[in-house]
Image (cartoon, rainbow over all chains, first blue to last red):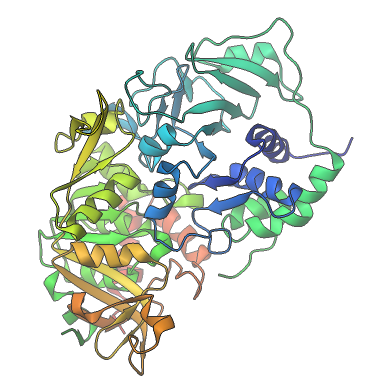
Length: 247
Length: 271
């Protein structure tokens, strides 16, 4: 087996979760989802469409910043990615802060487009590369966007999975709970339980996450890395040793 | 009719206390103009960043120019949290109106259409809504028990944008950054900095005209070459990553930020 970096494993896991899609959009500060989306396209000979929000090259929008959201509201974005300073067991995400809203103890950047996209994109994949009781909590301190909504609320979209540095969870929409699907090589179920602040479902035998194949690693390193460097120069340099490119 | 004037004169309508709209990083952020505003000592701004901000909001907050910030996120992207924004929030020094990106777009679009509000899907059940008493929920009048959020129109006093070029009539080429046109349509006045002056009429060439904000909407234009530095202007120049790393290091403390202002804002006069 070829040696791989953790980011390469996570991108491969996310690419499998993306599955068959026509349009994958990737928002701010999401280098691993961007890697996964570009990997899907590298595997699919130019399909699906990939929109990296901060990119010039990987972004077909001509209608300004609103077009992504309009596109999603029309049902034309199949997959999106969200994270959170905190994520709880019901799939609620907190991108705002902890403590009083006007005088928080901890402040995160803000909700970005989550309070819209989480509702309208059919497959939202949550990701968080710090899997700890600090980030995966019993109840978020601020709901930027809820994991589920009452039946009378228009909501064709929502979370399908949560991928962390230790494992991958699926999301059961009906029960509003995560289910442990696989644990990454080098990690254990006990460790996942110890570092997760919320309760979750798990089968009697939890499989190990399938590592990326040699062909996947080749695509990531030879085809995806140079494209990533436009938007995530530091990430591309750190993970893939990719030289920076100009604007 | 707009006029091409020196930068400080172009910024004269951005008085203390105005509601000022600025764009996101990928649309070209007028940083030279922002430094000029800090040098002038502008105060009590209600800054609306459509829909997010990075260095620009952080710099204005650190310089004490902001009373109210209305946006969906402030972050330095790969460089991490915005240090002066975070510090101001933890110490309650600014009033924060948390939003979500498409809500701000919709509110500007309402103003551009001259209507009082715009409905938007999502948001229900989010604490963003809980802290925005100015946002309302109604039942879709065309539906049956279908709640939907209404965003009041945002009509900023001034929109401040940067673009690749303008002609001498004040027409501004914005290319595909269409939200810059929406901002100009919504705002009372629009002030523009540009990389260069285009000799000729931008509206005369149909290819250029399609990406042109007519001078009709523009109050003042000033030339600010490398006007987004140290951020980038897409298709023209990349962000200065070394400088941004230095900013993050210096702005981590109030003292370091003051030194940053001395070295990179007060010492650097407008061209």
